[in-house]
Image (tube, rainbow, N blue to C red; front, side):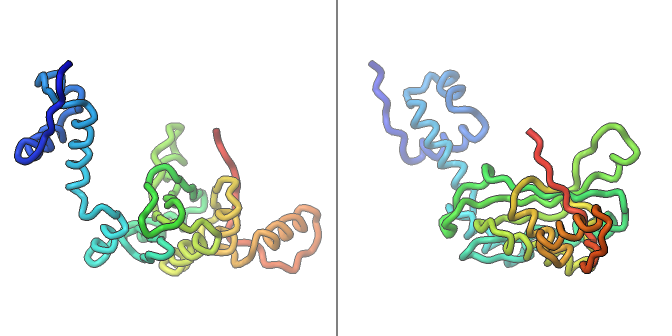
Length: 229
């Protein structure tokens, strides 16, 4: 039985550099190494962590926020972060003037690991716009990212605040917003862009459909809920 020796000191540092450009199994095979696969994976993981500013990405963001224009609004407890640059806001303004363009928002929870300072899992909320080239082409073009929200709080108030910050920067609102069946997303977009909750929003369109007079102001943004599998 082949004994697995410990890898320490200078040898461990050199291995970190070599494993950054190679898989552990390939390295072990090509070098006929006495190192175990689990040892190699641990050393490779150490090399990846050493490239980070810190072991806690919230600390990374706090450091970057001092000189990074991409980080617009930041809080730690509870954790949330608004991410966009001025060029994205300028693009947003241009797209808002195009009546045919729809905007989409969706949340993903499997990208970011749980933060040390966060009690809940951090979700990435992506706010994107339909590519204008789609209007003249049958070939779908990639959506255009307007802004991103990272948050450990997943209620409508937190998402609404994110959208209100964007609205304050452009003074316009989208004509069409597409969301999934998330109640938080539906209510947040309705309040942020129409200044009414989902109950008043539905009452307006119900009365309009039934041909009744309505006391409510017509919503500026149409909220479309859909989910594709």
